[in-house]
Amino acid sequence: MKASGPQALPRPAHLAGLDRYEPGRPIEEVQRELGLADVVKLASNENPLGPSPRAVAALTGAVSKLHRYPDGPARALRAALAAELRVGPRQVVIGNGSTDLIDLVARAFLGPEDNAVISEGAFARFRQVVLARNGHARLVPLRNWTHDLEAMAAAVDERTRLLFVALPNNPTGTWNRRAEVDRLLAALPPEVLLVLDQAYFEYAAGTPGADYPDGLEYVRQGEPVVVLRTFSKVYGLAGLRIGYGAAAPEVIEAVDLVREPFNSNSLGQVAALAALADRDHVERTLELTRTEKETLGRDLAARGLRVLPSLANFLCVDVGRPAAPVFRGLLRRGVIVRPLEPYGLPTALRISIGARAENARLVAALDEVLSETA
Figure: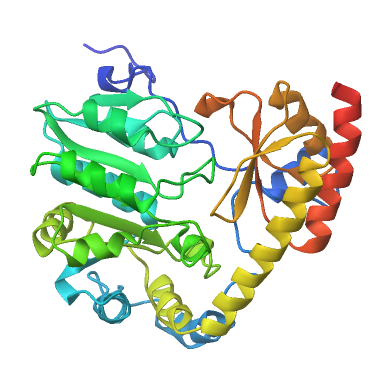
């Protein structure tokens, strides 16, 4: 007979050593913890202009229909995205943010003994998802703060099914040029699917001299590529969790087989559909990000800090000393940024581009902290 009372269940063996994804600290939590009335969050790469106004207006009419289940396949949003992206309707899938799709791709394509090749300094969810799936993640170090695609291709073996590349990379903001990605694709066996995470695509596209590749060109050419993007960043819909993927129909069908029936909510679908047509909001966001990133980058570099080139809406900054005390010092002053020690970058911070006043407050607080930690 079992002993009465609650029993502690052991952690499943396949989760041993798995770390948890830690998002940026919420403003309200920091306010309560430190007794601060005014906190600036520059940790999660959110849109400082807020959500698309068209999306907000569209939500008003949708709230009264919350007693209905959402359209599971998100047909209207898929069709609109297919037209926008110039791919077929069967080449698009919707997720609960692009992070949901990272998990779905791993579930669809990684068998018990298969592996995925991942850069050590790439978005943490790649590694976490694969380790939770079957533990077979083949990790390759960064080179010059970005993906070493040549070394990643060399890490592929007969059991490799997925190769993840963040383009531009999160958390460094760096990127691989078109010719590098072309060479990677040419080197991959046909059974390996290249997962291009382009969550920051809108910020990167069209940057003069960047030679930045549009992953959808590979999809249209029939290459074994799945492109992941999101409405969380430039469209300002992070709280509604809508991401999307584009790939060959057979790839999308495989992902659909493991997708939860209602993995995107009705409000998110309505808002994303409206935001997709809100070019004014997108252009204002891109202009603010461009000008403020240039200004903030100059201000940080003027303080002797190394600022990495970035095509995203954030900067990766090497503060030249352990970054954890700098992070805590900024936090005490009501400024939340992201320390990068979990990515193997112990002297670096990731700083989101905010509005002018937010960035100025960061710089002022950083001056105080750096003088204390020198």
